Image (cartoon, rainbow, N blue to C red):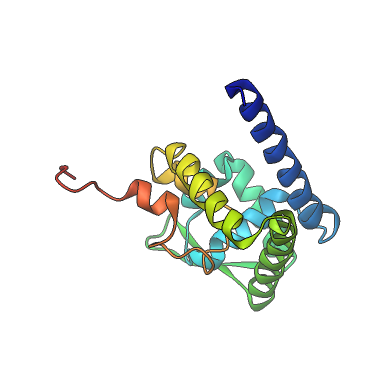
Length: 175
């Protein structure tokens, strides 16, 4: 198979999977992609600040403030005391935690359906190859957080995560 053909198939696959996940989140759950990513991120990283949250979401500071305002109005997120007077810590409410879990379930169901056409051996091969590609796309922590903004962290612990492995210091390299 020509490189161009393989790359084009990858692009079409990426778009089809992105569209299917988006449909499950936006259309079926009524949640914007930014809201979903914020909830999933805050489920893992409690007490984030607006500045820390905006980076993986690709939002400006004012845009992230507006997003958090909307999530706070719907009682999914609460602002708490931050590390200093200028910052506020963002925390999921009980409802926000339940919504984050529901979003991850919806995403997981779509992804499981996508790979259901593969045998167990094919899934292992696919995971190995996709991990290699994914790891090559991440240059720093911000990249990793952006790529993983909708990841189910429980199903991909750090020791198995191609993004975490990419970001770990290499043996013999200076930190």
